[in-house]
Image: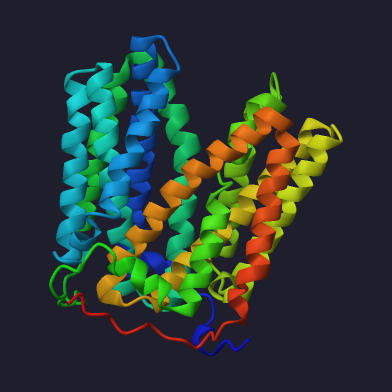
Length: 406
């Protein structure tokens, strides 16, 4: 493999992010937004459960987030690259505040489920445009630290936000937690409004909904990385899904949180370097993730101690951290003027594959045992690694020319 396109300058580190006029605001807004999102999500989940007295309430909140996000990332994806990206990010944050105000004003299950669904659409659009701004205005050496710190904010936001949101909801009621989420949207909008406009580029007319898919399919490196990404997210929620069945008592929250903790540590440590920016590094970690899944299968099958399973789950979470390298590769190789739509296509595919994958793996666990679910996930990922091998593809392939929609 040649590293011609991936010889970065020495690792800039995270401090350099906060000296960059665009990266600093992107990562700050992302941290605020992630924490607020999960505080609000915890409130919506508990609100739906308390008023329905059924697990179907929280399940409906989660399910409602998927379809609108999928529509934004497919049918409406062509709109993501038309308006000025700074303006779009600001208005998406404001839209989030407006939507969360609905269950704040009427804390009942139906408003909570509707708001959760529309917030799923806002989140998908926001994430796609956020990556597009990074591709457009942040230099390549800073992108991997930016994606790494953003992923760290997501992982820590889940742990802290869900815990804080649940505690606040129980102690003070859902409205207080929802108000915190609302304020976080508005603060993020203020931060994003300060993004400089000088580097924004003129973009053409709205492309068709399939332009993102055609861009990925037409680029050999992006195609290989996309397949590896889908094979990875297929089992992304497996440790959390199986944890209640594999651990009890005080060990249950440890096993439940170990994957997120492993992922947070991994992206924080590796995100400041350059190794995950190289295709070979990404493939090695994806292969290691397959090994961690197979290790977990072996531990479950042999009835190993619970602490060993928690360690295996942490390794699985760490292995999934290679996806920040995939983001950096897409930001480097996809046409900048189509980056929002390309990222939205990956978001849509991830939603579908993750949802279907965890259903199928969960069914396998129910029928044949958790060890079989871990085994299937590991074998499938290993097969995809061996078949795609994007590290053998021409690493100096630059962005493909934009295909006219006409």
